[in-house]
Image 1 (cartoon, one colour):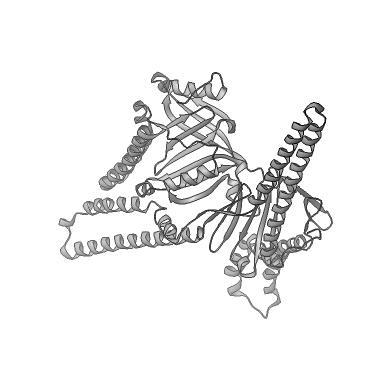
Image 2: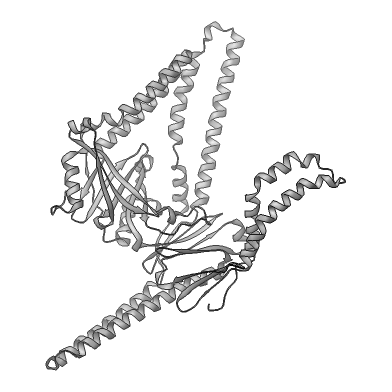
Length: 530
């Protein structure tokens, strides 16, 4: 790998696509406004096409130059990338600092065997677009091998230093010293073998087709939409004065209204089916493997992705469970990780966003068995559920006031739609009441010596966060006079996420509990479990 390598020839085709995207407005103007009146026999007609060609070449030629002059290779345990024609740019990444190697493969790349490769370190990264899939897999394996060899060398150096230090100890215990040195060497050989064994991929999870289909079917709020549609239709029917209409007109209006309802239902059904298919295509073949303290995740049918999640960058484990999936005992597990590399060349990069889906759809008890083995230093205990009842109406009051005000304004201008506005308002307020009930009944937290667990609720799902005390970046509390008079307070913990941060909060908690959390964060006193 010491010889400089070129990008895959398909890179030129990708550059062509990018140039078209950059000039899509110019192409649309030419096609719709100039092409229909284009006179092939008149040289003046070629003016606009010449302008379009110039814009296109100005976008495409720099990409050709960049691709032709891009070289990459590995030398002296360093990954080197050079780009540029006149102004040569050189970037170097230390092999030991590489944390993840991700690959993405779109439809065109699948046809010709190319991949987009992304190499990340804690503070930098390199994107190679496009190289051959074979070369990408070779690079990944070669870098993993180099990292394992470097770790073995470090272990050997450490053991040599231990042996040297032991040799200068008092000669009166020379025999014991020899035994200790031998045991240390045995430990070193075991560690080396452990490193070698870690390079083997251990299957962690693979989504079956049945689970994939069930996940896609329960991924949306289609049930809520259908439930809301029927009473709205009934309200509209009540607004029409059927008795004042002639028989023929009333039959026609009823036929039209039923037809509209059927069309709406068909549109919703088609949208639901399309959404289900898209979800299945996106998560097709979702597989998680464990290799060398890293999770290797592969998924996708049209756009295949392979990404690496270093468990050392883990900041928090998050369970996200919708109310529908809870009925069937299924849930989803996400990891919040850090990333200092801002990638602008590859889209849909969850590592950069900081939240990575590890188990997208799995039985809850099985999910916790898996993450307990993956992240054993976290304790997955149930929170102490229950928030103050005095905070219940605060989840509803302001949103309900807004909904009622909007309904009143609508009724003022369209008083014939009173029942429609009432039904929609009741449905929305009902959902807010349900959310407030779940929040007061089941939200809560669990504090131990070095870990925090928080469970909160959104309108259609619940979230459970598990994170260590040493991963917390900040702690905020806030309350207004009305909250203070009721001994309530809001708080949120801040942890690192991607290149930014994540706020994990609970609203309307007891002020004494919030004060205890503050002391726990500041280490003002030694706290036990709460």
